[in-house]
Length: 307
Image 1 (cartoon, rainbow, N blue to C red):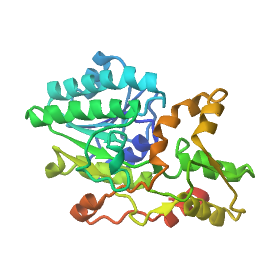
Image 2 (cartoon, rainbow, N blue to C red):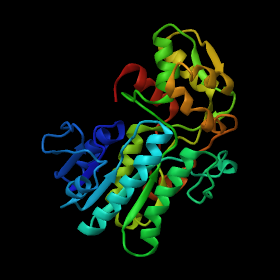
Image 3 (cartoon, rainbow, N blue to C red):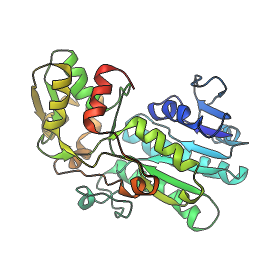
């Protein structure tokens, strides 16, 4: 049995499809899980309850933690450590392997122009401090020899049906509405984005590769990174619209945050947009002979709605 905690999210649903290459016993866990494959086992659960996490993990060989909590600092500080503690305890109790789908918030600000699996942890944000804490919880158990686990790390991601992606919200959706695309801080800085179907396929590969465990992996991401302006240009060309861009400085986000609560959460993360941001996935690409989807191909799929 391979179990997905947080199965209704963008990565969870794509991962469920990819896991059929390896097993027909897939358990989908979320508040209101929906079948992706005909043989999926549905397990409705509130993962904020530790006893429920234990029940959800029981009988699993591999557990994929791909939960996406509300993008709010107070929620992250309350819920992430508690969920990670419960998940690790359940995996230890039931002798399950753990695959954690992570982001890059814990990395030192000086690593952003070229992030690798060896980049130091020194988060400049409170959200990053939460991510460092929960990643360290896993690796402490790994180093102690008690847990078989791996961390599959992604850059900011984009892809079809990914409504929460910055590229969808600020570029694609705006163009659909006849508005200018928005871009934070500096549109002339390069920025890596991981394509969600690639991320899901790679996570399934890692979870089913014995010697991939007890390590950190960057998920495959096109190394031919583009500037914000160039990415916006790809969308404009594919959508056949004029390339109009509004650059949003931090002060504007703070002001708009008074009226749009989600924008209050963004300013502390804007150090990722005021400099080049390169997410290096060459370790995974070489190990698994994997060629990431290009930005040109990814944007075409988003616009045309076909995988």
